[in-house]
Image (cartoon, rainbow, N blue to C red; front, side, top):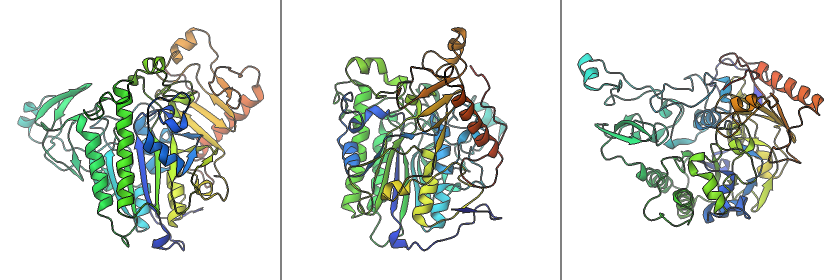
Length: 498
């Protein structure tokens, strides 16, 4: 439900009592493929994921869930704002560890919305949405730190605690992006006086080690859960993990456990951490009324050495074509498991198409908030699916690749506005154009989930219909009902890119 209001952050309460509001735990894996969860890929998944399998068995599996983008920063923007990131200033690629904020201060986030509904809000993990870092004011200090323009002794601003979260503990971006240091609310826990390299060289806390991040985030999440008592206000914990993204560093305890190399070991360790968090909920008596969502920010990365895994019988992308970064299904179809024992039937499944942007509308319906028209422009509640009372109102979804290529999906039809992968897989768009492949790709996913049979030439009416639909969604500035909104900059979904 939406209505126009003057103040962008004004929310209204419905008749939902505090006791009826569930805790919300949103766990976001980093580069985990759909096929890496054994329950979703029983025939061709060889990595043991008992805790995720249990989550699936005790809740609902969405088998047609998609990240908002095929890479992480834009997906994270969509999760927290309920808006496709291609409407923002980020038209392709991702941010770095010292990039400025992507989410404007006046845009409503799911954390701010839930905070207004009486929730304690916390973010523990990988932010990767930009921060304001202080610059050196003293020219002499700038000279002493060539290539490092930031004064890390100063508080950072415009981070998670300025976007609706009561608390934040984690890292600024991916584990291979400096600065390599922990952030506690708005300060680094130690000055980065050393220099370290995980893919990229940069300033680092001498004691910070990438291998410690997954255990550290798990420990902090457990501490938060253990500190909650019956009768406390409900909590929203956004837990964006940094695994199994590069650097792929399982701890000694997990090294060799999968028999599939470091990536398999790291996935198993990630699964175990989810199990530890589930156990903490049980110990605190919070399981029954805690809604857990487990998903991934995009598909499996080529850094996992996918071909080597497949030779050993493990297919991290399941039956889908493409990888992280691509417009094909492997780039953005993700595991999506939801458990809420008080309300969601165990062992249930949903075939509804959902997007990670849908958290905002779902959380609003759960908490009794009415979203203003200038927020969550691409968010549809999937609460009816969870409760078995109906289906989400979402009828279509827009996909976006690392290079800024678009696809539109409605029903079983998917139209991609590029000749190749739109990302890293072969053929890339430049190669596809050189090979004379058509500029458009149309697939009927009900018959061709592997996206092998391009029907664009034989189905011109479908191409025309879907093109018009995407034109409307872009021009209106929203895909939800409501008054038209402006995109942050002009959007050209037809533009040929590298």
